[in-house]
Image (cartoon, rainbow, N blue to C red; front, side):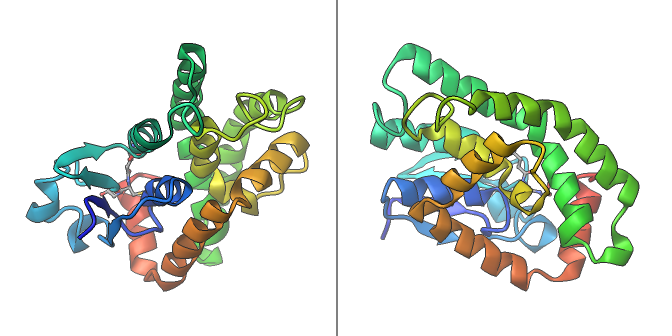
Length: 224
Ligand SMILES: N[C@@H](CCC(=O)N[C@@H](CS)C(=O)NCC(=O)O)C(=O)O
């Protein structure tokens, strides 16, 4: 039995943990828990993550929640100096970009994708979609600028900083990104990696199977 368990169906932010596990070539067990009362709000999962949210991991008895804490932890544990930056400054930049992704763009991309792609057209709120795009314009310009003269956020090599930011905005790949050509090229560079493609295939399959009521519940629970 694998010592690393990743909880959460791939459609959720568990995608981020699955991607890093594949990037690192880890052996893991994927526990495909659904959000809300169908899984993550049940007592057995609340004992693992009292927040009732996905993902969580159990790494040989060490439980961790928060998707980007999980990617940073696994990258540092298994790939220090490579996927995880080897210098104090590089590490700090990885934290910087990870926190930036959560605070600046995570919610906006989620709202946009629900009201542009995931909800049926008649249930999409065009005002919310437009507002999400307006909120994303400034941070996307910053990200576009950060990858103008370098292939990856920290320089020549793909690191967990790229993984975290591109995973957070992965659903923006369906957006018209013409206004941010460097961001677009960088995002595709990250998402075309074999490990990303494998994790995205799990996510796409889970997306295809999701009952509409669950998508509605996601929008409702998270006020998106
Ligand atoms: N900041 C958390 C957010 C986790 C989160 O909101 N997960 C969603 C799925 S992507 C969830 O579980 N939503 C259901 C709920 O809140 O009940 C992380 O990055 O792990």
